Image (cartoon, rainbow, N blue to C red; front, top):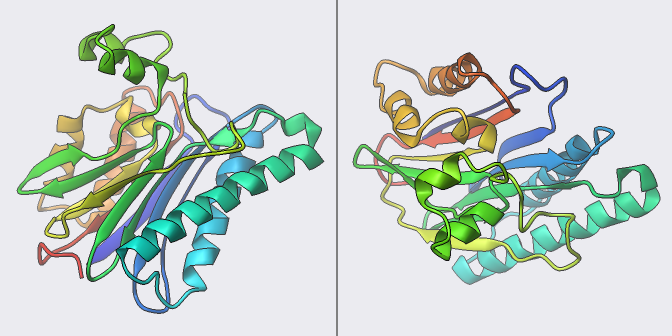
Length: 248
């Protein structure tokens, strides 16, 4: 099993508000996470950094997350702690009021894989040469698609497609969507919307399936292709590839 992560400011933004990590705990379990911050005065990068650094440290300090229900509880508790830390920061730094961050995370053990998200950063799995999105965006536009008021095609170009309905730091009570994923897969991809707004799922899939590329080269190529198409936002990717087809 190999993994690699990278973040890039893109071609338009003058600084990077994304944060990303992949860490192991003492039992060899793996946590992947991508956070896309928002807020003025560079507060977005503070929010995403709080999320990723707290999650990473909390995970690397434990020996194991335990069984699946224990892991779900761990994820929920950790996200609630991150949310409280962001609120604490804004209380102490009034100029950063309104800052927040999305979060997409994957937790892998020998027995199960969980993917969780808040906001519009995405979690995908690659299986049988097919890239499938697991997470659901917490955006106004996605809500309108679900209610039948917008088509998928209309949603892609809607002027309010980036308006979030959920984010860390936006409400005092947050709920992480958690998905139980089949362990017999080839890869997991987590990314900020700086990737998915620039490339189609088919374009991403094509790069990930290129057998001539090493895992690092795939991630770098995805970022380069996003920048070549405009690089309108920060781009962050956490990618894990499993050669045996079963995550262990």
